[in-house]
Image 1 (tube, one colour):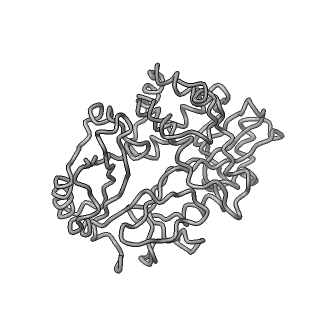
Image 2: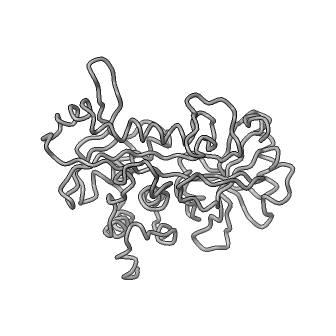
Image 3: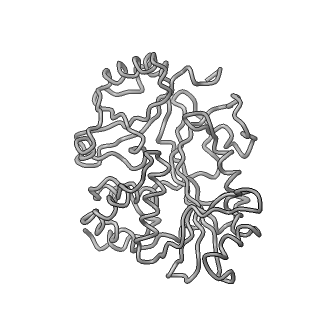
Length: 335
């Protein structure tokens, strides 16, 4: 490893460094912390919320050492009962805040209640030994598909910037719903009467506490339309979504010299490398085979598939792009 790699700052962390890590959960953790932030600043958001000062130049050497001896991480993950992607994401970050030398994890998923009901919970409360203060860190992993004018009813999807047109693949939430909840409820919770009361049980209420938002994921742009990216996002437009109907009739979206990997939900985070195919027995398809598979699944009313396009000839970093296929039956009229 080069001296530069050892000294690399977290905000300069690149895909090439990520691919030197052999263990997939460690690459997923690296992706969560350094490679997948959806925003760097948002008007109206408290400036401290998007500050990524929970990572530093010691992260990459620590990840490399963990990659050589990953037993504690695997034991930590084995203790989770859920297979949900959001729980896996939280478990990775829980390990980080428990084991990265800079932090002491004080509590996680700590409920905030008034006299009658639960108002919410703090994802992580940690003591930051570098800055000698306490951090409240909210975390989320989200994948949203962009639409020109999404008009299908989704509860609470009120306009906010252009975020109400960015919809989860299962059509149950939107970027607007998520960000409004974070801005108006979750992140300010620490400063409320009930939030402070909940925290007073953990430490002296005179301690300085700051809130951070660690929101990771990807935005997927429609194959057939050029639309505006989510306002204030870091998106680079590399990811696409396409309807199953269009995929099966279009001759340009898939490439005959590439292979395609159907991604199980727990592989939606970091990029696929060559070892993942055998280690996790992933399903690989040619262009023709993928179309045949999707045709059958669509007929059986499967709603969405996330696919990685692979170039097996490119050493270890074989993923060239990622996309969603959405069953046409789930799309609103006009899409």
